[in-house]
Image 1 (cartoon, rainbow, N blue to C red):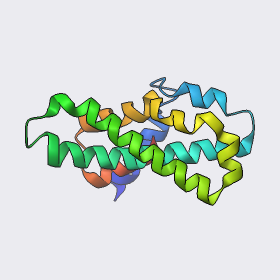
Image 2: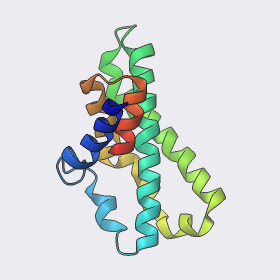
Image 3: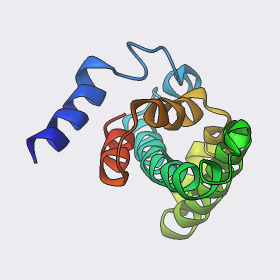
Image 4: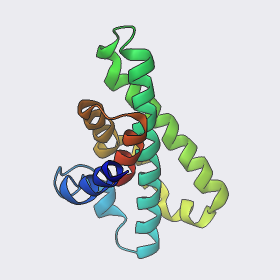
Length: 140
């Protein structure tokens, strides 16, 4: 259990995606003018990162590695992340239309955020399990 806590704390404090690895600065700078918008964008990005890390682990472990298709890793992760972002956009549109309107173009741009692709790639390199992958994505 403590190893899970260390994964989250390490992702948040030691290997912070924005401040240490300098990934994902566009949304960080673009929507951080209002607290409500920044919190909404942060929650959406955290949701996408968490699901993206879990999905990328499953795709890499069950599909790409067994069939020796590792050269398709980046493409598979991009398609997966795009689907997760579209799902997230639909959820936000249904649950909070005002937040959806305020986030505007920044919400679909989560797909092109380098942190959203970088974190799953880093996660695969660290050889985390599924639970560790989800925690690493959440902490990032």
